[in-house]
Picture (cartoon, rainbow, N blue to C red):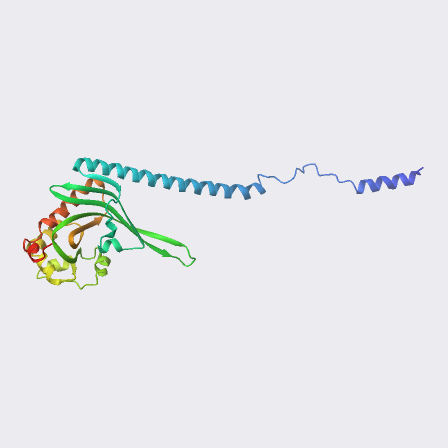
Length: 262
């Protein structure tokens, strides 16, 4: 049996080993501490995913609107429309079709237009670059083009507005050809593998027409085809592009087919 002193000691020891929580203790708040660590990354992820989906949707919707507009122009101009290139145009040896690290053709209109066989289309290429961390990015360049037959078998020739498509002209590795008209020389860069052909093709009448167009188109002639390329435009403006291409062919001097028979 415990004495009175022993009982008092036991009570003291019991009080020392029993943990009594403070009145306001309720443990760590999930909302105030640990929850923030998980909520913000989740919000960033969801926000980023939303932006990716939104961008993809807007890109898809824009392509669909452009395709619908091309269909409308095909009906209006009595041409055939193809979403993809049915002719293998990238196999043609035009300098523009060899630019960049990747390229493509889409939204092709083709058929007879004002008694001329035409092919008109969207064309793009991209340059790929690598940053210091090894990441890659692409820079896209977009054009609208028309391809028409030429009434001759022509050497390779390129005509550009000065400071427009200059890299493309440089790719031909030919010197800029000078003509009698200083005004024309200031406005245009002409490169050709056979300088005589350039002088035969670009007579005074052709010079006057090229200067009168006032457009930012470039012209590349190879064999019996001419490629006319300009900045990307709305499908409704393709009539103007076709008109420029047809005008170029109509201004080919009559002597050219006899000098360079196909």
